[in-house]
Amino acid sequence: MLKSSEENLNKKPSIYCLIVLFDPNDSQLALKVKTTWSNHCSRALFVSEKQHEVLEPLVIRQPSPIREHKWQRLKLALRYLYENHFDEVDWLLISDETNYVVLENLRKMLKPYSPDEPINFGCKMWDNDNQTYMHGGIVLSHEALRRLVVEGFTNSSLCNPNDSAYASEEMGKCLKNLGVVDGDSRDAMGRQRFIPFPPEHFLTELSPEKEEWFVTHSFYEINMRTHVTIPYFTQTDHYPDANRVILLSTAEIVVQDYRDVGNPHSMITVRLPNSSQRRVSNAFSPDL
Image 1: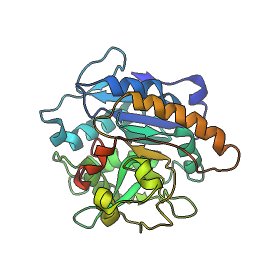
Image 2: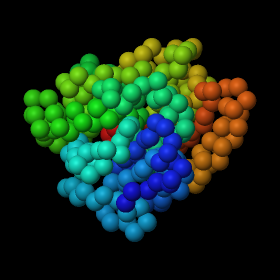
Image 3: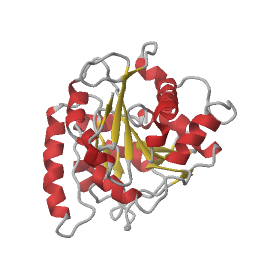
């Protein structure tokens, strides 16, 4: 169930990866994630509705359709993690199999912060109620996870006790009520590093027709200066070709070599173009 290597266990800061499968009926992409970027986590735990002999996931069965029960599934997974592995968590990355993450760059971003701070990171967005939440993956500190499970999930006035299809928005509301602050994950030039659509759209011209929801809902201004970057973390399509994960892994090695000669912000991720058509209400894959 828990995957790690001695080398990654010793890397600081340690990052525990919780990978909640978006589509338990198709394990092809999850298997690619298992053999690529999740190997760089200090530990990795997959969550699914079905048993799998290779992924060895934590099994949480929910009523169909799955998309309608994201918040409840995430709460159950986080409670399990807190009760069984809390001491192993400095930082918790909540992702799914449609994301590609460059863990080494995420570690560099987190180094100035303490896991004892109540803080979370992601792509900061406005929801339709003008409240902020993190999109494109969520990173929680040790203290943020403690507050969420111990104080939030036990108090219906702080965290929604009911189910919801919008897990990321519910998480955002809950964390605010618990005094968990939003960390700024942008680089020194104000450029985004958690990107919820294909990098080729972000590296060239951000098309209002393709990413209008991002431009209008982003907490930070998106303009010609701030949108040109190669991200730390990017969300891929809900239905991507698993072969592209191999492409990402190869590209990461090439970019790492380039970064070492003078560009600390360079990294590559890929997502299928049709994924950019998703609405903001479907943000993040576990809706995170």
